[in-house]
Each structure stands twice: as structure tokens, then as C-alpha cells.
Amino acid sequence: MKFYTRFSARLLPAAIVLLLATTSCESFLDVGPPPTQVDAATVFTTDASATGAMLGVYSGLNSTGTSGITNNAGLSTFLGLAADELTYANAQYDQYRLNNVSPVNGTVDFFWGQTYTSIYQLNTIVDGLQNNTTVTPALRNQLLGEARFLRAFLYFHLANLFGDVPLVLTTDYRVAGQLGRTPKTEVYAQVLADLLEAQKLLVPAYPVANERTRVNQAAATALLARVYLYQQNWAAAEAQATAVINQTSVYQLVAPATTFLAGSQEAIWQLRRGGSISANTYEGQYFIPASLTVAPTATYLLTNQVYAAFVENDVRRSTWTNSYTLAGTTYRYPFKYKQRVATTGGAAATEHSQVLRLAEQYLIRAEARARQGKSADAVADLNAVRARASATPLAATLSSNDLLLAVENERLRELFAEWGHRWFDLIRTGRAAAVLPAVKGQPWDPNDAVWPIPNPQLLANPNLTQNAGY
Image (cartoon, rainbow, N blue to C red; front, side, top):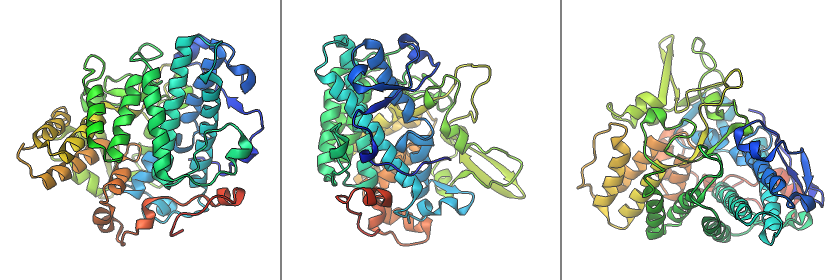
């Protein structure tokens, strides 16, 4: 993977520049090819330029060198190593695998810096659209809803990766570059405010027909369900998840073999790779070995814990994992995405990265119901996810402790190697100390629940402080 290592909001010009990625993907056809850079003072004067600004942010979210925490399947890989899902074929990423991430780690600095670059762009879009009278009102609401959603999405992940983080809502780069850390509770409050506003502004329909690579109202509702779950607001999490699950004409659980296809009916929000029409996913590129005839040297491999979590008749194991054997050694790897390289001849990609999908909503509701003592309903949700994988139904008579463990294990089977779900689950439920020592061969240090604040950021901003233990 290629990463870049230095960012400070102080380095941005006073007139913030929006990155607008030029692309041939059909989502962009209605606005024409945007210029590379547009001054914020003029970008929100027409429907086309305002749309181009938003599309540029989307393109950057999954592009090498500009995407921060969404880059190159970064959360899926590095948090998979930090949890008990993945190992790496050599010691290159042992900092993550051994939960010993350094403050001078360039990748962590990249995640931080580039994510704040995207947030800065989103702040500019929010400011440019809030009182705008030149962009068509319906489009203004759509774009503003998308910007509020994406800002919430990024801050949600920053807070869960680093704890207290600067809450930058201004486009004044001089102020942004000097902000100290905001308590995580306040960051979460802003995440909720953004998502609730996005939920009002967005509509059920996707902006582009037959595409789910830009967010709609259901995406805001789905992320709200997750945020409420993390806050232990069980009733609200259940209600929001139910609102998505009940949209049966749009969202359905599908067979594991088709779950990760572009436009899958299980998809709530997918990311197109770099905006390119022909590029398949970074997940496919990094998880599928380049060669099956030599021992891996740069491959993410599945742990035995993940593989052993599946029962024999669960087709997720045969469909979402793969393996090859050399010299008596079997190497297993994630295989949710089947395409390692881009399509040829300009054909459309067959897979997009799944960010939000329906199965997670069933699992959110199952946990929320279990926490509220609604055991039978919780089991029914788990069994809905298991049924489409041909897994044996769970008994409705599980004890409360066994039911919560069943939820944890089902989330592992369903969401492994996806966006760091397993890592975040172990941290938010306090289960890391019980699970990880047996895998890592070392005691769990509670300070490892968050990453260090990158050292270049501390040097650039004297108002930042380091996390404990680093």
C-alpha cells in the first residue's frame, strides 16, 4: 500500500480548494467533467459545480493518497490485524497485530491527516449550501444531506480510533490548525446532530438510478442505528435498524455469493473505487493473493479463530473464505470480494466496497433487543442472517449471556474483514481483554483501545495532547 504522511490544517490556503476528481463513471455524467480545482467562492453558484464538489469528495474517499481512514481497505486490513481476524505474511505490520502502534507510524498519520482534509472539504460544502439560494432547492438538500452524513461517518471513525479528537466545523484554516482535542462525547453529539439532519434532508431514492454509491436517507438511518448501539441506547438502535429492515422493497438479505456485487440488494451504501467505472475493490486487490503457486510474502491471511467460527454447513465459510496449500501448509484468506484486478476494455466493475449493508442492521437490532431482554426477537434476527447462509437456526431458549455471545460470534462470522467491525466490537463491549491475549500471546493493555495521536500532528499543533500509554 502507498501512504502519505504529513498534514496540518494550517498548511491549507485561506481560500479552501475542493478536490474534484475527473472520472468517466456514469454517476458523474450529469455534471460533465469538472475542473481539477475550484475556488469555494464560485463552486456553489450552479447545480453542476455544486454536484461536482460533492462527487469529488466521494472520489477521494476511496482513492490512493487522498482518502484517510477509507483508503485502500485500510480499516479492514489494519483493524483486522489489531483484532483476531487477520495475520500478515511477514512482520511488516506487526505494530498492528501486536497492538503496539507507534506515534511516528506514517500510516496512522495518513489516516488522521487525510481524513481531516476530507472533513475540511465537507465543512466547505456545508457552509456553501446552508443558506444557498442559487442551487436548486431539492439538489441543495440532497448535497447538504450527503455532506452532513459523510462528516458524521468520518468523525464516528476518528472518535473510535483515537478517542478525543479535534472537532473541526470551521473553514478557517487558522482556527482549525490550532484546535485541541474535543471530548469524545461531544464528537458523538455532533455525529448524531449531523445524522439526524441528514436523515431529514435526504430522500429514500438514490441520487443515481441503479447505483448505491452515494448515500440516501436509509444510509443515514443505518449509521444512526450503529451510533446508538455504540452509545448503548438500545431502544433507539432497535428503532432505527427496524426502519431500514422494513424497507423490504429496496433492501433484502441475499445469498452470500451475491452480497458484495455492485448494486446488491443488500447494499445500503457502497464505495466505488476512486470513482473509476472499471476498478474493482481494494479489498479484492489486497486480500486475494497475487499468486497461488508461491508462499505468501505480502498477503493478509485469515486466522484460525475466524475459520473455526463457522459450522460446517454455513456457506459463508465456503463462499467468503478461500485457501491454497503449498508444501503441506494451508493459507486461508478473505474471499468476500472475488475480483482482484480492474475489468478490461472499460467494462463496468462488478464489485464495489460495501460500507453499510442490511445484515448489519439485523445484527444491530438483535443486540439491541437482547440488551432489552427481548430474547425471542433477538434470536429471530440472528436466525434471519443465518438462514440465508444455510446455518442451523439458534434455539429460542438461549440464556441472556449465551445470547449476547451468540450476537458477538454472529457479528464475527458476518462482518469479518469489513471496516474494523470486529475490533470496534471488542473495544466497545469490553471484551478485548477476554479475547485477544489468547490470540496475541500477550496481556491486553487497555491503553491500546485507541491509537496514538500522530507525532507530526503534535509537532504541528501545540494544543494537541497524546493518548495515555504512548
